[in-house]
Image (cartoon, rainbow, N blue to C red):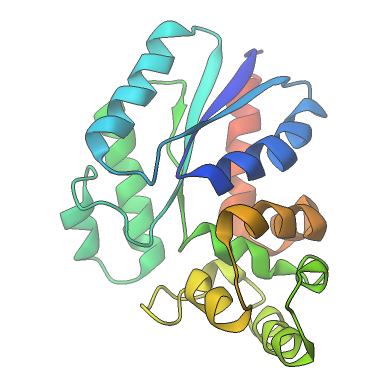
Length: 213
């Protein structure tokens, strides 16, 4: 049994989400040392690689993973150019994760790239949106249409105006990701994300299995 899981996170919102939701999810399964480290917007593969390798070398009884967005992923990430030539975002992400895994080449490392971005996970329920200041009837109606329109919100696309984050900024006056993101996810509940987001669910299952090896 590994002592814990270290997350290389895209930014402050992902750190808050990991510490407010995933930490309790894994502690309930006997994995108590869950930490998140802000990568500052996943600004380069070199930084990502060095951070992952540093943790793996320094700690011998942890799993290292990542939570970074496919949307606007830096082009220097391992396998990026080859993956972009594939058809379908899911295929691209699988290819990217495989390339990153081969690049870092360590049995205690589990790469994860969020399809398409963290904000997609917020569209699993209306509970969190109902608590956000500035969400009037019109805004809540628009958000409800998106929630009901995507049984799997991971598939909300990555267009420059239709990506999950762009939708939120357009619909919710003054939407601020670091302020609202983790809060909405917490209010919705982790189960709502697990039940609706199969890639996310599979990632948690892989981490749990790895930690128990």
